[in-house]
Image (cartoon, rainbow, N blue to C red; front, side, top):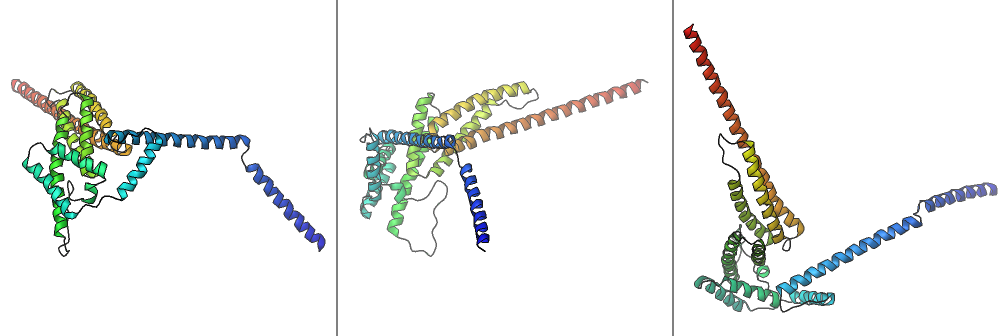
Length: 330
């Protein structure tokens, strides 16, 4: 009995020792551990570099948007962010009546006086940036496309509706002004000057409306511009059209298209997230150019097919008349 227990214990011990030995052998050696720690150090360094880059971007943007605030060091940046978050969470309480009076004054100024838009945009921006008063967030209303709807049976606060209505009218007026400016900026010759002015317009629109709606509006402006470019670059359809002429027009179009893409990339990459910038360029330029090129090529091939069929028919009729004349002579 005892010998049997010893045998069982010995077999179990031997088995466990074998498993432990296998386990130890399966663990990484010194070189593998060094590589693992090296990879971890590299990831940490990449994260540190990325954080430093983000802090530099925050410093640059804050110094640009708020001239009275100059962030020189990383500590300055973190202190400013802490204060900004604290102040944003404790926005100043403005009496409802005072807010309505203020917005009515702005609205009256916009509707009764000329060229007040820039001044009012600067005023709203200063109030938002320096006083933590966020008009778009607290008074969101009708968008570019979809009017707000309320239940027929709901009880509405007239004063709140008045406030919302006034703010929506102000935003609509400023939106028309900014969209008109954006369209006119496309006519500027100097690329750097054009990019700078477009950035300013888009930032002001983003102050008033959600990013998705601003992108849709700007997409519409640029699509119209691209359609005019494609129409001017591609030759008109005619019987004299050939692939050489079409290729020449296509080459000219691609060069101008590249300039437009580069311009919009430099305009948007500091305003939108990288994925949003790439998505905008793809949908606005690449997809549209591919679609229009395919459409042009399809129409060109159809025209060439009809022209070939016309020549065959004409030749066939001429041959029939010739055979008829030969029969008559015979």
